Image (cartoon, rainbow over all chains, first blue to last red; front, side):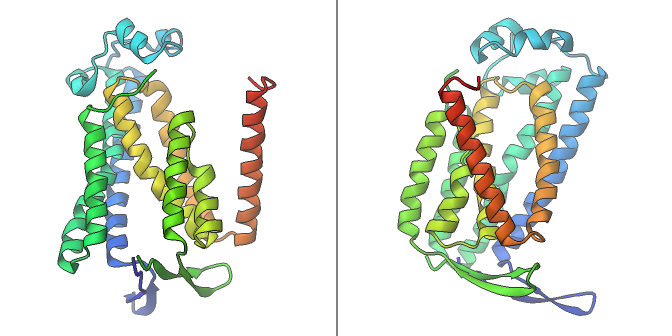
Length: 149
Length: 143
C-alpha cells in the first residue's frame, strides 16, 4: 500500500492529509458504523438493566448462571444457537446483542466499500485480501464455525 | 508489496517517512501469533506491536494503531462465533464493550501526543506485567 499524502484544505488554511483514499473511506464507514453500533448498544443495555423490556432470565439469577459452560447455560436458559437470538428480540437480555452484532459487522462492510476502489485501480493484491477478509467474516457470521467450551 | 508512507509526528512537529521491511518474515510471525492466540485464548496485542515495530520496522505509533486495527478484524470474526453459540452474556459483555470503546477513544488520542519513547516504555512495562502475571498463574501463585 503506497500511502501518499493528499493535499487538502480546511477552512481556507492548507492542511495535509497523510492517509490514502482507501484508508479515509474505510475510516469514514468505520466511524459512522461504530457510533451507530455504540449508540444501539448503550440504548439496548439501558433498556435491559432498567427493565423497560422484561428479561427472560431475571438479572438476579445471572450470577448463578454465568459460571456455567456455554452448552450448560444454553440448556438452563433455553437460549437458541445460531441466528435464533434474532427471534428473541422481545427479551431485554437479547437487545444489547443487536449493538454488539452491528459493531462486529462493521469491519466486513468497511472491506465491501473498498472493493470498487481497488477494482477501479486494478489493485488485485489488495482486492483479493479484502475479498478474503469479507469471506472470513461472512463464514464466522454464518454460524458454520463452532468453538469449544 | 511496497508498503510505505509518511505520517505526521505531532510531538516533534515533523513528517516521518516509513517503510515496511521483512514482510514474508512478518507473515510467518503473524501466523505463529495467531496459532498461539487461538491455542491459549490470548489477545494478540501483546505480540503484534513488537512484531510490527521490531521486526517489520513500522514506527511505534503506527504499530500501536495497526495492532488495534488487526485486533478489530480478528475479534469481529470471533464475536460472531460466540454470538452464534449463545455464549455472549449481555450483562457482562455490554458494559465491557462500552468501557473499552470509550477507553480506546482516549488511548487513540493520547497516542498522537505522547512521546514515542514513553510509549515504548509503557509497552515494555505492560508486556512485563502480562508475562509475570501469566507466569504467576502458571505456577499457581496467582489464581
